[in-house]
Amino acid sequence: MIVDVIHPGRANVPKSELQEVVGGMHKADPKLTVLFGFRTKYGGGKSTGFCVIYDNEEAILKFEPKHRLIRQGLQEKKETSRKAMKEAKNKGKKIRGTGASVAKHKAKRAAGAD
Image 1 (cartoon, rainbow, N blue to C red):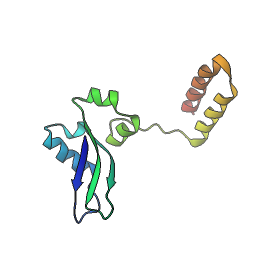
Image 2 (cartoon, rainbow, N blue to C red):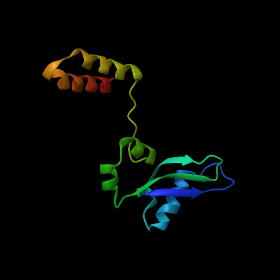
Image 3 (cartoon, one colour):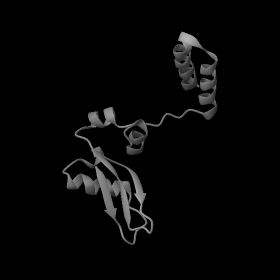
Image 4 (cartoon, rainbow, N blue to C red):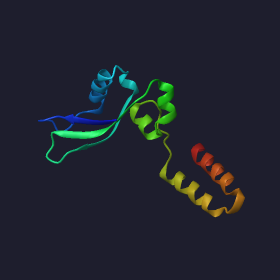
């Protein structure tokens, strides 16, 4: 759903605060309320964004993208070095044909092991 927030005198409103309010309005758990894509209107005082409310934690883990799960604190961010990612990418570019997907998988696992 689309959420319009009117906040005169404030620069913007924290998502954690909005989760509580929107969750309360719809009788839902604030942890299962996901807010994203907020933009403040020119001149301030009003913001518009999106909200998704899930029935249970299983549904949120199934349908939400990983980056939003990390922001919610439901998943841990996997730290990989920039160099390891680039090496895996370039190793995958060197293999052609049917073995490409296997080689990319192996390169990805090798980068994760570092």
